[in-house]
Length: 230
Image (cartoon, rainbow, N blue to C red; front, side, top):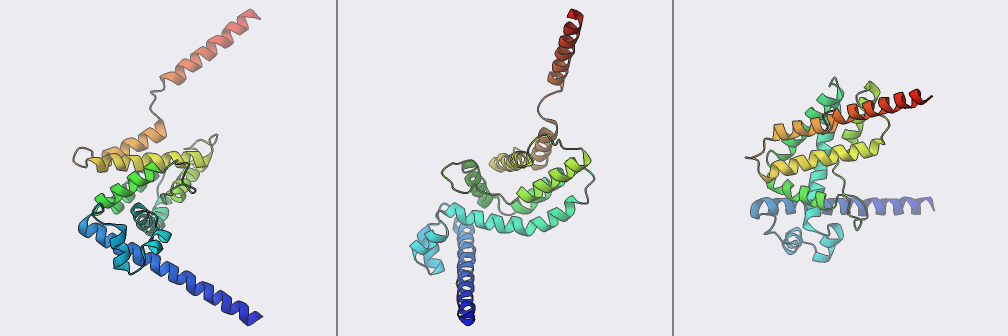
């Protein structure tokens, strides 16, 4: 019985390894075709033929072409993540951590793959909160932004009265939409300025502080009025 279990586990491992190899082969060949002839001119049929699998098998791995680019993006972010997490711990405050993370991630990911990742980001944005998608499309930056905000909470830079996951989601959304804006016309938008403005907006908000001052004045006036009645 013990040997049978071992044989079964070995068979499962071989099968999973074969699936992983097929997945990697699909991604590698598809990305080559996308770069060579363009995303729009590459069909799922071509990819299946080049990989030497059936079209049905290809769809079992990747339902749409965009999901292949998503896989490629995830692998690149995974490779980058270790360096970003190490860098974050050397930064003195939340602002510098976000700025450096934004700048390095954007430069590493987009310096030679702008057209390909423009497709990915538009696909990610369309499915960001799509209820028909069973699992929300992950960008891969969730762990990185979570660490930045946790460190900020520990040092008092980031508030603690809001759920961490909501703040992480907002930071992720703001970073990737800033990248989309820049990719829409790199000559018109400066990547560095676009990302710096995004950091300021996240940390300081769009208000000038006047609203909070007015609220305080109203509150103080109300308290004073109530006191005079007593």
